[in-house]
Length: 62
Image 1 (cartoon, rainbow, N blue to C red):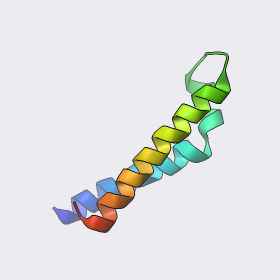
Image 2: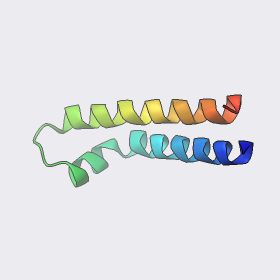
Image 3: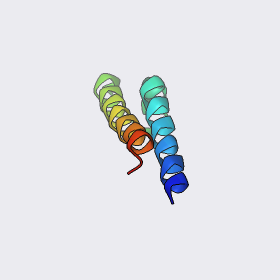
Image 4: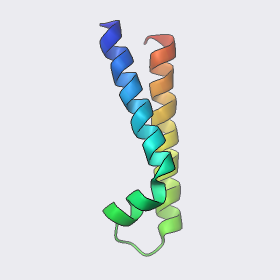
C-alpha cells in the first residue's frame, strides 16, 4: 500500500513540475483566451500545489 501511495506522489510531483516548467506552452495549447500571463500564472500555481502535495506524500508516507 505504501508503494502505491509513493508512486502516486511521484506522479503528482512530476505533473506539477511539468506544469510549472511548460506553463506558457500549455496555456497556449489548451486555453484560447487572450491574456496568457494570467493563464500561465494559474498554471504555475496549480503545478506548485501539485508538486508540494506529491512531495509530501513521498516524504511523509501518508
